[in-house]
Image (tube, rainbow, N blue to C red; front, side):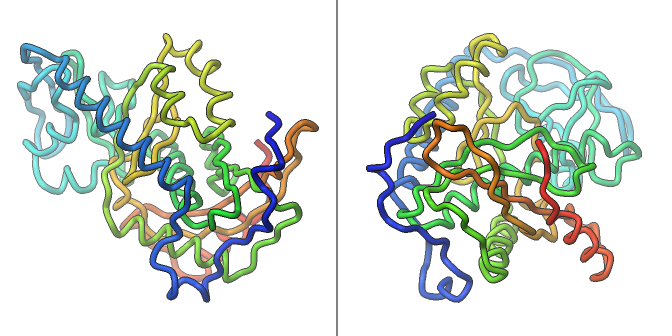
Amino acid sequence: MAISNKMYNVSRKLLSATSLPQTSRFLSATSKLQSAASSLFAEEQIRQRDMVGRIEKIEIRYLGTPKDTTLVMNRGLSTPLDCAKHIGEKYCRFSALALLDNNTPWDMRRPLEEPCTLQLLNFTSADPHLVNKAFWRTCSFLLGAVLHKSFKDEAGLFLHSFPKPNVKTGSFVHDIALSKNGWKPTIQELRALSIEMVKLAQQDLPIERLDVNSELAQQMFSDNPYKREQIPSISSQNNGLITVYRVGDHVDISKGPMVSSTGLLGKCTVAAIHEIPKSSTDQLSLYRVQGVALPIGLNLNHFAYGILEDRAKKLVSC
């Protein structure tokens, strides 16, 4: 989608690591709009909870350690995280994803709608495939949050999209649009972004999911032409709904699922930023930001992690 050059007539540059101590937060006009999106998210979340009406009980059959058990929960209100609270504190802390009826991955904070069996998945599960995909997707989402706040207002940053998680590529990805052509980040700038990812993880913020109608989604992303352009297509494939996620004040579109909180992110590196081809009508430059991360509690020695970092620098084709 073409965007007027009048909006972007100032040269733009990412804050370097050396400037971080003098800048408390890199807030910009778009950051304020992002807070508005978060407010809309919160209002709709409350509205949907209020619509539940009379509370109905459903049976959730938990399968796993320390023993199988049946829980009586509230339809449309109780989540897998609420179930985990009945089982043990460590299950609340380390469960990344839920699995319903042995085949449906489910966000830990997403309300349960029907009686079902429930398994709690973590990063040491016998088959980590679903958890790994959710973790990779979450890393892309969190990278978007960090990118959104880390650029000066003059950069005219727009979050574009992030592709389906593909662990085989060696890196998670987020695409962005900037007004600057040929930008090549310094090592210090990449390190500054990596530090922000780690800071976000240390806050242990909840990652929340919400399904909204396309009209509300358009309001949430009124400042982002790329998101607005994507909404009709997504809505048509999802019964008129758009799935959005929130962490802190950051809101973005994703079909999910994602892991339950930022605290499950361990070591993380923003490894490379590549300029990628743009459409002939687009006046902004597109960049692919790539990173690699490990879940909390999974440790590698410096040499092995360095190999992962080098692999994550290679341009991912999406």
